[in-house]
Amino acid sequence: MATIGQLRKETYKLLNEATNTTLGAVSSGTGTVAAGYDSDSTINQFLMEGIAEMCRSCVAVPAVGTLAYGANTRTAYLSAASVTIPTSGAIWFPTDVYIGGTRLIHASESSVRANDLTYASTVTTVEANVQYWYRHDNYAISLYPYNSTSSMSATVHGYGIPNTDLTGIPGTDDAKAFTFIPDDLLRQTIPAYAAVKLVMKNIDDPTLGDRLFWKNWYNEGRMKLFMQLDAGLRTAGGPFSIPPVLGQG
Picture: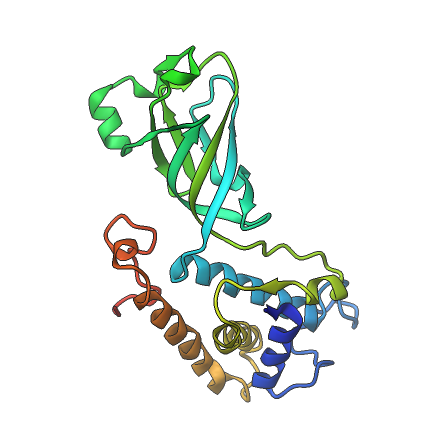
């Protein structure tokens, strides 16, 4: 299990910097480092960004969560889902929706509209009559018809990202571990992402500009993981239909 602390050390190795570097620090404007914006905190945030992007582009992490629909609510956003797998993570691509023990039928919004021109206002007063779900956009799930009289809870299955929230407490954050891909792959890719973000942040330093090739390391790692995905996940309309690096795969 690679931890944030270990991944950050790998980032410092790439940068050839000591752990007390100011490369990632943000000035307060008065000659000191702004609270919470020291190099360690900045790199931790970049590491979390890299992990989230990897899970959205080339690693299929199964996710399960609960999405609440209030009375007379047609659409709920995935960002509001209470995710239990991975614990406290997030769902970014839904594949199945259940209400109670009933699996709803997936449809496209265009097909629902073609069947019922007033679909946006079609309601039911019985939970069991809710039969279809569709993606209102990439980050929301809509029901058809939707319940106008009482709230409902939907169980959503799909693909997600692990919990990337940071506490801001170094000891706590450093112990946070990730297991969605092997440690060696995490160490090869995620620190490269963080290093590139630091180079971009300090691009006015001529000694750093030539190090942007680290971005290629990160992208090559993502493309390898992408090509290892099941072919069905990479088909049109699937969660990974767009390659991490356009023009490849």
